[in-house]
Image (cartoon, rainbow, N blue to C red; front, side, top):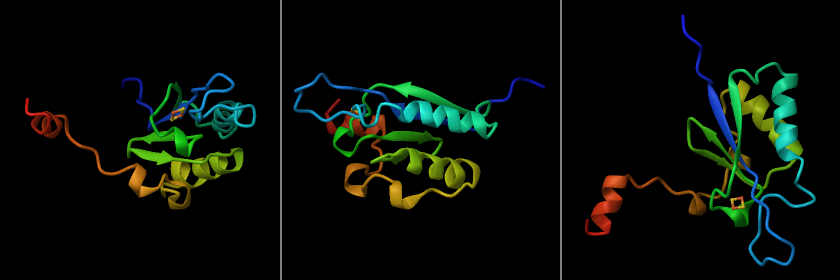
Amino acid sequence: MGVPQPAFYIFKCEQSAPPGMPKPSCVTPESQDLLQHLMMTLMQKGIIGTVQPIRSSCLNRCNAGPVMLVEPGHVMYAGLTKEKITEIIDRHIIGGEVVEEYVIAAELWDAPITPEAMMKQMGR
Ligand code: FES
């Protein structure tokens, strides 16, 4: 028997912007400990071995930040707080139910375009 794959990868955007930058970012003084909270909560529940948190750069949804992406499923959670992360772990990661009220707005997260379809759009 081989080494089991993780059941989930959670990509937490850890992009910060220098002070004075007009573009919003997911890591601010108020939100800088969310990744640590995510990791600590997974550890406390004893599931860090099968749920792999990933420190990510910008996921291109900065206006909805702080954000994190759960794979499999392409589920993007927005406007995160510690309380929301704990609830997402309990209900989605352990319970198997997407926490719809914390999912990014549909107009910001439409269905993916396949690379083949994108190449056709570009005339290649
Ligand atoms: S800074 Fe987090 S999505 Fe861009």
